[in-house]
Image 1 (cartoon, rainbow, N blue to C red):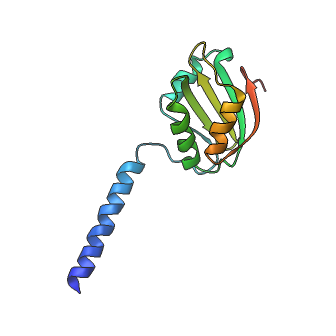
Image 2: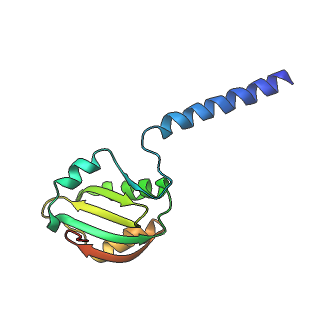
Amino acid sequence: MKISITAILFMTLFFAFQSHAQHGEHEHNHEGQVVESPAASNDMENVSCEDTINMEVSGLVCDFCARSLEKVFLKRGDVAEIKVDLGKSSVVIAMKPGLTIDDATLTKLITDSGYNVSAIHRGCKHG
C-alpha cells in the first residue's frame, strides 16, 4: 500500500513539475487582454500599414486559442508576426514586406483552427 501511495505521489509531483516548467514559457491571460509573443511588440511597431492585416475572429476565449493561431501563422514564410487580442476578438497579422495572403486563405487558416472570421481589413486600423 505504501508503494502505491508513494508511486502516485511521485507521478503527481513529476507531472505537476513538467506542466509548470512548460507553462512558464509565456504570459498567462484568461481575462481577455492582449496576448502576444515577446518579440511581437517590437516587430508589430515596425510594420508598415500596407503589410498589416486586421481580422475580427469569433471563438477566441483563452490563451490556448491565441497560441494555436500563432503556431499556424508563424509556420508560414510570409508572416512576420501575429498579435491576438482576446478582449476585442481580433487578430493582427504583420506580413513580411511586399508579401500578402489572400482573404480565402486567411479565412481557411482561421476556420480550420476552429474559429470564425467576421471581417478582414487591410492596412492600419484607425479608431
